Amino acid sequence: MSGRKQQLLKRHRRNKRLTLIIGLLLLAVIGIGVAWWWVPILIAAAWIAHEAWFSDHLFYSPKSDYHYQFPDAAHVQTVSVINDKLQLSEPLGEGETLLLELDLRSTWLGRWLDPYVLAGDDRQDFERGFAGRRYVNLTGQRAVVADGTLRLKGGFCRVGDSARLYVLSNPDYSQQRLMILAPHADDAELAAFGLYSRAAERCIVTVTQGEIEAERYEQLGLDRAEAARLKGRLRTWDSLAIPLWGGVPQSHCVQLGYYCLQLPAMAQAPAEPFGSRDSSESDIRSARQHNPSPLPGDQDGAPTWHNLVADLAALLDAYRPDVIVLPHPELDPHADHIATTQALYEAVHKSAHTPEVALFYANHLHDNDRWPMGLAGKGVALPPFVEAPSVDQLWSTSLSSQVQLDKAMALAMQHDLQGPLALKKRLRRQIQRWLAGREWPLTGDDEFFRKAVRRHEVFWVRRFPRP
Image (cartoon, one colour):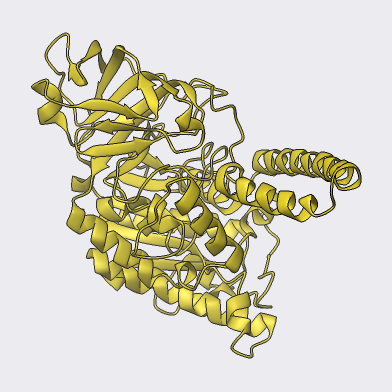
């Protein structure tokens, strides 16, 4: 987790503690001055209200505008919403990624139920109680946008009469040679299963074993280190085997075997080895047995930053990818994700091969842990940029219902996304289902089955500087 995300969580928890103290003082006054039996009733009601409406982590005002600055090459036009239909002011420009900038405002009910925009056969949700500029993703609906038959209607929110439509043109990156860089097993599937499953030339490089937080395996009678080693073996297997479900053979999958949450420390002391926090292992070669070819780090097996950068540089030279798919360096706050992207850029400087394009993804988000908001199978509206504008080119792809199902099954095979929900999370979901109208998919209990299995995959596009 990045320093910024830690600060946001610290502030969020401090505010919750202050609210709790004030609430307890009020309850004490009620218990003394009115009747003591009101106290447990009010405590229960407050807890239910918190779980239903106030348990989301939202670290910005929902009344803030989103800020995006699209490249000059984007085709933009002012459009109108007349009788719930989107009307263009000029012919639709060429491009596959369609983004609609709207001014939206939630109704009173939208403070308690998730507000959304219905766009044709799609639905995209937003923050409760929100107001301001938002971006609806119309990618995949070009035909109905062009002929003026796209229906656009707000649910628990009001849609402004005027809007701006951006059309962004990109090549089909699935037709180029791809390298998907995954900090952990499952990151490639979460971010880019739809992309890599239709790509002709692709490889997947997983950086870590994913061995930490193995409490579930301690229930098998293993101690902490044994459980971590078992989890690391299982997730290493996941990183090599599950991509085959998307058509990627094991010979095009590489596991580097570094250790979870140690990448930032490695970056700070590049020559120093950092073994696992939990498994007591410090030799990365234990996870590399099935790699298709030797790498520089195989020589000593030391989990150092120097070895990681050398491994990535060697892979760039061997695979010579045109496009690298990797975590967004500003948007995704996971510490291992940030360090993975940093290592790749250092490797590019050491490699004889420079890729053309970086496609960035965000499996986590600094400011809103429910993004993409809304239902599984629906579209992905753009995430919040409220402090500084995003100036990247964007590329959005569309996933058919069959590809979405295949993606859900790929996630279901991931050991880290299996297992039952904790009792508190299960209670929270039931309360939100009953009181807030939220729904979750049947494909899996983990939140990523809702967030990642969508009709869109979204990538931020940057070109690598030429040497």
